[in-house]
Image 1 (cartoon, rainbow, N blue to C red):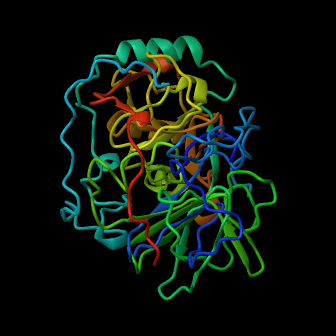
Image 2: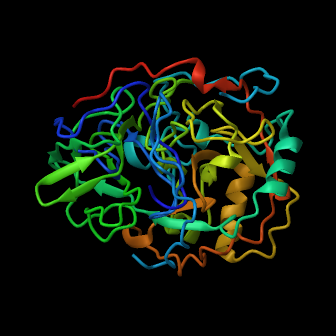
Length: 419
């Protein structure tokens, strides 16, 4: 896994695909691919740094590879059973699946007609402003727990290891051979586009030399699809991959996402890419979406998740006052951000307006895109991996979480996308 992420992609409960099996797919290993034309996403594991996660994708049964907790610091910019559920407040209203996206107020659009700076329609939870959302009844308890217990040296550090590739219209799709990190049911075996000159998380090219999370992410605008793969490894004509999740980026998913109790490339079952912030966004002064954050497994509530998440893992071992998977936190409106760098203040404002989702297990708290595939560099955006380390957990609060769902109370049942 990539250091810093953790146990994002659970294996499909009770099933594994044997080595040597071949699917007409192209997502294997830690690779994320977005296909904007079909708008699908598949991801199995992502720790937040090229090699810094403690959460590996897991099947619905909770099986998982040994996590890596001592994640090295990310490269500097420009260098390539269950815990007892807490009281259950009413579940917040959820967007209607396949609901059409409203036109952006200023008329500007990005991939698949979505608002500029947002990969999914405005109704997607990560694109929804929560600056005035009510607090959860456990907010104080969760923040007190994190403030007292999460004190590692990588707390509030940023990982810039994830590459987000864009496939041109007509880009050939490659089939992949599932490896041990591909989970039957949870993961999609569809072939995926692999742009020439690209690469996977933590590597210079497509070969997973470091044995890290090696996510492969590709956006295909002509298809309106997002491809996210964990543990991708491409060497010559051999394409091996772990869990691949396909997302349609032109629709709003319902409460059960790609499938209830199903993993994705992240342990919480969420898409990775729409939660990554880029050097271009920070340089231009605005991040118009929520942000991905991760925690070590011992600080994630054991076997519990909340919406819009769909998954947890057996590696979680946090107590009842720790945050569950997919918990949404926001920075307090009265937090003093004046001491942050120019780029750090842009991130902080997004945290106040859109918040952040607990998406995976690992060490490096925040996750940004690599500047290898952006117009501006992180130096130009005036943001380094250390620029948010001055923050404190008391600068945050927990937005209403809704129902606490016991991961062991169900199993993943969905029809995998094969083409």
